[in-house]
Amino acid sequence: MNVMTMPSEGTVEKELLDFLHVRTKTVWEEDTDLFAAGGLSSLFAMELVVHLEKSYGIAIRGADLRLDNFRTVTGMAALVRRLRAAAGDG
Image (tube, rainbow, N blue to C red):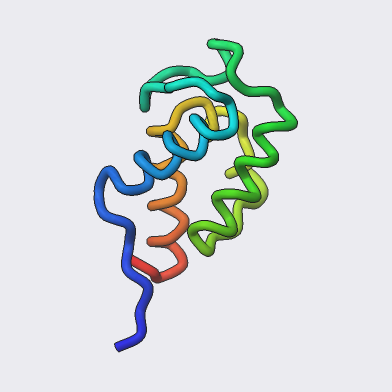
């Protein structure tokens, strides 16, 4: 059976923390508000959208583009899992 599997719990978070560390040269916690902490700009949020779409085979559109979905690593991972499940990948 050739079905993409849902990333295991913690895998998305770890990958995102690694991506953010490389891009910002800062170590982040999963629940840190990245925007309030001054770590991310709205332009970088769009880079995150592209990264998530390419890395996880999802399309982030419409209401899912709310800034709140990108404030924390936990929120981004939840968005990835929800969109993958909705697409039938889970």
